[in-house]
Image 1 (tube, rainbow, N blue to C red):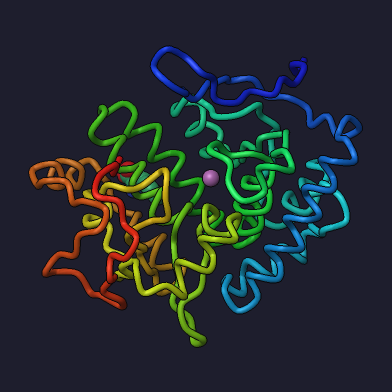
Image 2 (image 1 turned 60 degrees about the vertical axis):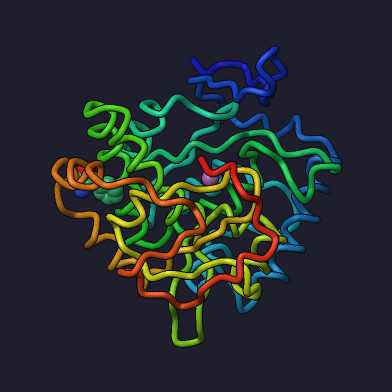
Length: 296
Ligand code: PHE
Ligand code: CO
């Protein structure tokens, strides 16, 4: 029996705002969405659809259309699931918010992608601290239609379960990989750099910034390098990593990570904005607008 949905957002405590983790899987309460909820979806969809022309990778744009996602109304997970079942076997599950790491990995390993059921409020169009339905569904779900990316996500889930057993350092290395690929990844195409990371795809400001600004570094994908690289959670990224194609991502992550974690953790962590001598650099960022500290 599925649980009754609750809207779970970060909560104020005496230590500031902390994210709340729940494990519940809930049925999407589609009939309960208000006109405002649907209007927020429509507005964000139209805005991003426009800004992503020539910025998102073609695979993303084509998949989003193929799965019938549109500005008209908040999609029903059941409709999306019918399409996904026929293509890559992924399924969406409704969740209330952030999941504990192990629970999240287990879902991915089973090709279940957790999607937050609730959508941000109208005053949060430009920024919301935690993932909501727009980020999860608009940003992450279309590429689950791509066979190679779909396999990468499931492999990531299995790798997460394994890293969880290896300890906190391995888990941090793997989290950085997710951050710099699934959330903030760029891809090189015949038409120049394009976006495939969901954290960018669901943000108007970062969609423009990551490609058009001279401020951030744009560096070729390198697994071990990424595993050492700290990141920003409260501002645009200082560095983006660029893959050649999804096959590169899948191939680079095929080896057993256990010895790689060991190697990588003999080296120091790299600050979010640093460039290393071994980097293949597409753009050396000017660093304009960077805050001094705050890397995670
Ligand atoms: N090959 C990785 C391991 O052994 C698993 C993994 C695959 C991790 C894909 C991330 C992405 O841990
Ligand atoms: Co995300």
